Image: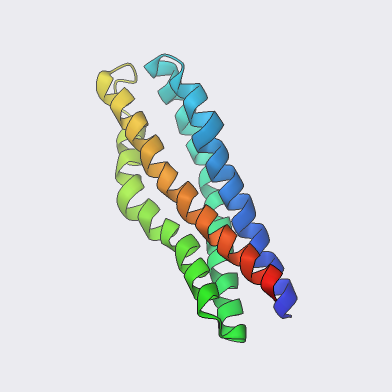
Amino acid sequence: MLAVVQFIAILSVAIFAGAAIYINVAEHPARMGCDTKTAATVWAPSYKRAYVMQASLAVMGFISGLTVWFLKGSILWLLGATCIGAVIPFTFMVIMPTNQQLLAPERDLSSTETRELLVKWGNLHAVRSILSFIALVIYVALSLKA
């Protein structure tokens, strides 16, 4: 049972971190290489597709990490779970207002403000990448130690 839950924790956080890092290292810089209207136009469907996948992975990584902590009693599993779990409220409280501004129907997709919002979004998303990578390192290190 414990091994299965550890596997789920590591797998879900690894996929989340990989996707988040890919977005920050490749996808978002590529779209930002385009004109603002194109960047904003392709950002919206990308965000909508990634939202469900990343939310599910963050929840699975958090719950499974908490479960391992509960079963093993290692405070470091709680730390890893807290790191991946933190992306959820961070997304809702910090990133979501920017998302809503970018998705506003009346938004001028060619404006300087839109470009600034896309840059801000990329910087905020990097926090998710960092938190998920920290959780992954903790989970993997603890599983290798066992």
